Amino acid sequence: MSEPLLAVKDLSVKFFTQRGVLHAVDRISFEVGKGESVGLVGESGSGKSVTALALLRLVTIPGRIVGGEIQLRGENLLKLNESELRRVRRDEIAMIFQDAGNFMNPIVTVGRQIEDGLPANMSAEDRHSTACQALRAAKVADPERIARSYPFQLSGGMQQRAVIAASVARKPSLILADEPTTALDATVQFEILKLLADLQVSSGTALLLISHDLAVIASVCRRVYVMYAGQIVETGETKDIYRKPAHPYTQALLGAILDPFEETETLSMVPGTIPDLTAPPTGCRFNPRCPKVFDKCREQEPPMILIGGPQAAKCWLYA
Image (spheres, rainbow, N blue to C red):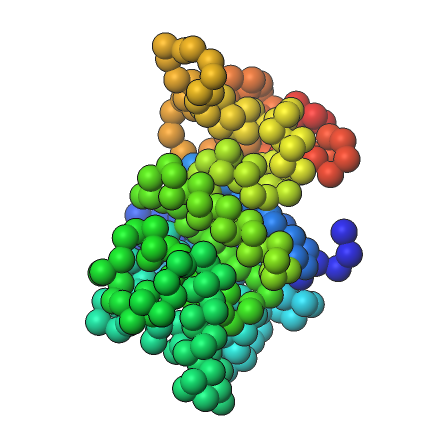
């Protein structure tokens, strides 16, 4: 891959709580190329959403970014002042949050909210036209009507389309989509995922899609990073990881996906829970739940080990 659009290096985020220091994101590194679709997958509590917030420097007290680099086109975002950071948030990186309705102002029309994110030097007519074009790109059948509507007048799926429209209207270089199909029914989920995939291809915008569901990631993303307990434990081409997952955690995640064409009486599940990150396990963080654990796993933290091609896993099985 050529020089990446986004390069995250050894990023760490900690939360300083009364119970102790919680290691929410621990020395993770990953890349997103220009126009590329990349997935970040893991259970709830694995650190995915904190990672997304850190990319825009939106982590709030008691959380703090304590180390690493976040480079966009070679520029370290952690060194920008507030004015420069606002420029990046406005022009370069857009974020689509889960449960879109909670991130829209209920007393401001959808069109006005989209227009507010556009450059101030545009005329009122151009701003309205651009907002409607963005809604049309988000596959909204009647953009003029939706632009005049308030968020509470829209369904959950339409609210999500409106948030996506607000993101693409600015023509960003990168879209961060954090669980964009949560709480939507299966049909609407499929429509939203197809919309994101189509927009990513047609606009050439890079996409970082965050989800707990590997099937969702596989439907949209070319590459994937698997995250567990604040660390990235496997990475590679989505098709390779789907066919032959290497890390026992990835294998467990895939085993928990229900096959609609196969009869089964029990649904496979990952045993146990994510560890307390104020006192993470010694060695591999997955070792208390891993069916393949051996002594070294409990004693030493494994490095990321290349398995073949671009696929790598943070697991002593491949040392």
